[in-house]
Length: 561
Image (cartoon, rainbow, N blue to C red):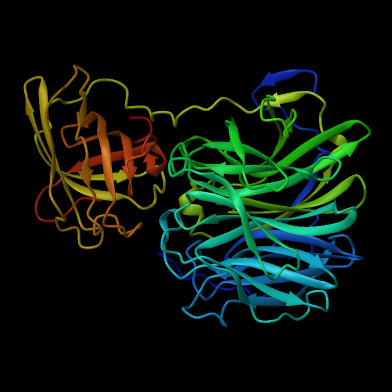
């Protein structure tokens, strides 16, 4: 699945490019002064992601995962560490950390930085190579490297917690214990299979104990969780937990989970209708007002993504309190994007980082995961956050592409090459040999999957009989549940891939062709919505086969037809 990309020659030093009371529905233009000066800070033609920042006295550190051509992990991955002495205007490469010291050619990703007692800890998640649906069989370990010179040199990464757990967010809790000041480092982590998010605690950043389960649910697919402490003695904990519970590649929910010291039991009944992937949660208190800002991945129909800034309003510590979600600003981003970080510049401003596929063209999320991506920066002015609340736009499915207008030849009996462009990655189509027979006012249609490379038949054929055909040459054929041979769609390389309620809505365009769109869902394993990928937005085209040579592939209705 990985594709070779040319590594561009870059220098060790690179400069930053110069580049409420009222509520409403939809997205309004945000004040330019909230997140301004959006620009690419790093680009090398590879897939860069998972940003993190920290302020160390007079320096900022910006780190991210690089070295790879896509999301699929391998030993090529490394954490790149850059430093800035001028509040993020320029950065210098300090060092890199990889997983070469760990057995099995492991990946390294999702870095986090924590400073404790003069030591800088770099935590990351390491998995074995390969594609891991729901992180299954990834053999996740949370690994740790240490630096005592501000990130210039590091110890070799070592496992700090295994057992299939990847730690996501590290949060200090400062409190009084037996009337003495104390500090404990907490982490939220999720397991292989994305069924459980738990809380872990450490007094030294090295030895960790599982404190309790925050949420456990196969159907909710919980993973990345933010963590904050509130109250006079930081005795209240709140976690914002990402839930992929409404289709793998679509939107979902975020659970708002609460607990009190000793944080062994959690309540997660509240949900918001925004799936906040890889969130960064900033709490700002001024006088009696506390505001909660969240930077995260935003989900659009047809599997398109953005990085966006939100505000959560309401008492997050009270399990009964309603929560209002306000969308502040959509940042320059597309494709595979987000995994943000924030570092303070001064009391009112912070530096925000994220990663993104090229802003143009707008790639679907899955395609973006195997395409180059860049690291972005912006300056956030929290004082410029709007007082009015603009609710995120209501969720809606990917709209059906239009069929050609007018009437067409009805008798299209014959054999065709049918090319389906899945909404998840239109540039990676699925090919079928389509045999169609018109019987008066109905059609019979048989689809034979073809090997993606050789175009010879692969697996069993699919059939739909007696589909009514309209006077304009349109018809709807439902094929039910069918298996996708691995050879026909090697993109996911999974023998368990199938489609359900697979339906073609078609329109004849001439005696030698028809086209339209597909609906239904694709499913890897399981029988739940959280294991599905909706096919709405997928298009196809069919061209008559004459002779022994396949015609050119057409995967959509021609514009203007």
